Image (cartoon, rainbow, N blue to C red; front, side, top):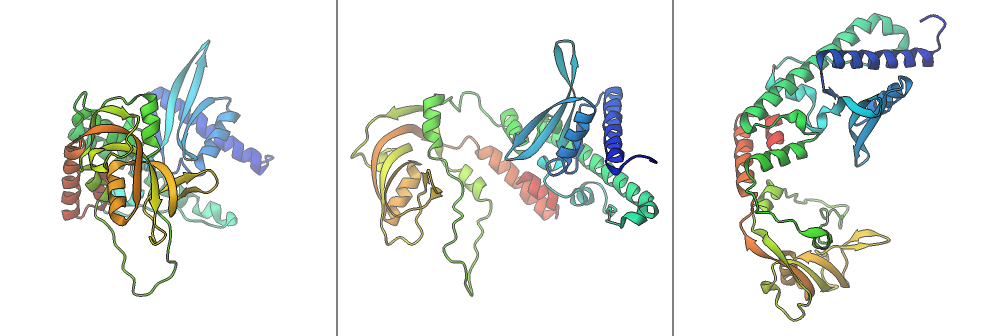
Length: 343
C-alpha cells in the first residue's frame, strides 16, 4: 500500500480481517469461531483489532490464559453477543496434524514456514495455501469430533469452552443421580477447601545414577473409584481423643511429623513460602484417610474438630469405568488422540 507506514498497513489488515469476520458471522449466523492459538499471542492482536473498529468485547480468562473473547454489539440500552472466539486446544489439546491424521486422513498438512521479508512475494501463495489447508483441517476435525461426541453422549462441544467443562456436562447428563451430592453451604465448603492441595512436586535428590522412574497408570481415575464422603455433612465441634478410624470426612488436627522422616507426606500452607511439607509440629485440615496413612508412616495425629460424612461408593465409578474402557479400546486401535481425549 503506497504511502502507508508498516504500522498503518498492519492496522488496516487487522480491521479488514475483523470487519470481514463480523460480516460473515452475521450473514451466516455463526456463533462460535475457533482459533488455532487464541490462548497465546492472538488475543492481543484481536483485541487491538476490536479497539480499532470500536467493537466492544468481553474476555474470559483462567490462569492468565484467554479462554474466549465475546464480541458485543450495543443496540440502544441493550448489548448482545455477535459471536464468540475460542481456542480449539482448550477443547482438544492435540496438534491439528495429529487430530487430522486420526479422524480425517493420513495426508500431511502443509506447514507455513518463515521466509525472509524480501522473498515474501515469492512464497505468498504457498503461505496462503498452507494456512487455508490448516484451517480446513481444523474445521473437519472439529466437525467430526462434534458429531462423534453428540452421537455418544448427546452433548454439543460448542456448548463447552474446555475439555473439563465438557466432561462435567457429560457426567451431569448421563451419570449424575439426582440428590446424591448435597450442597455443603459456605462455611462447610470453606472448611473442606482447606484440605485441598495440589500434587507433591518437591525434589529431594537432584542427581542420581541407575535410578527408577515409576508412573501409576490412570492414578486420578483409580482414586476417583475409591469410597467417598457421601450424604449430608455433620459438623463435629470437638473430637479430641476420638480414634481416627471413627472419623470419616475432613479433620482439623494437630500434627507431629518425626524429624526422621526424610520425605514428609502432609502439606501445610504458609503465608511466606506457600505450600511446604514440614517436619515438627503443625496444624491443618486433611481428609481422614490421609491422616490414617500418615499415622502408618509414623506421624502423631491429634484430631480437634471435624466435618463428618457417610462412607459410600463413589458417584463417579461408572463414569470412570466407561471412559477407561473407551481409552483401552482406543489404545488397541492405536488411536493416540482418542486415548488422550478419553483420558
